[in-house]
Image 1 (spheres, rainbow, N blue to C red):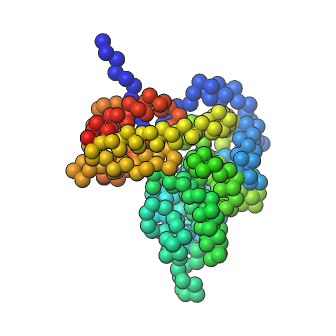
Image 2: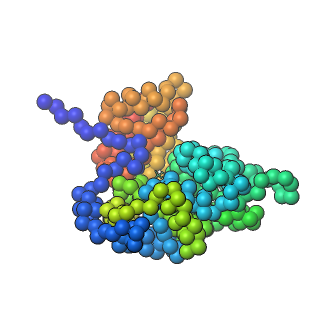
Image 3: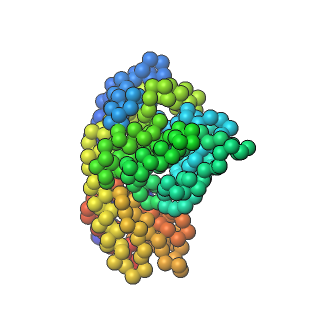
Length: 343
Ligand SMILES: *Cc1c(COP(=O)(O)O)cnc(C)c1O
């Protein structure tokens, strides 16, 4: 009997399953009650993350979404505006948390694919009128909605300076900051130095099952700690999951360039199809725009029937993401299947 090859799941870099080594590290983690008097493995992860990001302190969170919301809570004033890109994770995928929890009104920075100095300036209100005040600028690097685009350090520095010049603090949603660093060679700490707080995710490129961290000054992290507790994010023997994140930092951070090479090769193969319009990848995400007569849901179903799962991004765009559980051979097979479907 012919064996069906296993499904290749390119919907997200969050679909990775913890490896045997990671599971072992988690099983053997030294733990304590982190709410009561501290968990040693969580502390090690927080210290390592703070060091990598060049910040005084880092706090471990169950998810990037909660860390983002805690950052907004800690950095923005209630009843004011936050500048944020209209295609940001904070706007699209956090269930209105900025308004519901943070008490702020998003002022959207419009214009694809990511924030530029021009589009930021266009979103800014003129001074000295009866408008709401803005107290926070949120930036995202890499930018998920645009297909993992990088904001290079000089540009990020300039954007932060524009925000500060109008009295805003700066938050960096760096769920995939690892990828921005791997793609540019810019140290993580240089990116994080632009912001008052930076979020990083362990469950994306690093292959951990859960977790994110927020890093910043002691002062900002004190407010974020309060928000985390308020949101119900105080965790007890969190060392079990922190150990997975630590394992990811130690073993998987240095291999992210491989995902980027896979993305580049994948895009090149799919681009050979007559009807494909592939956004050239900068990191590990490849967006594919479908021909006018093909709807994304139908395309995703057809791909799945042939053994590849893709993410439906809009009615005419699918997203594919390279990650730890996609080998070179998987990538080439998946690319061939999508190429044939689009030919
Ligand atoms: C995934 C993601 C988040 C949220 O992280 P979760 O751990 O899934 O809650 C936030 N921002 C960006 C840019 C992301 O890609």
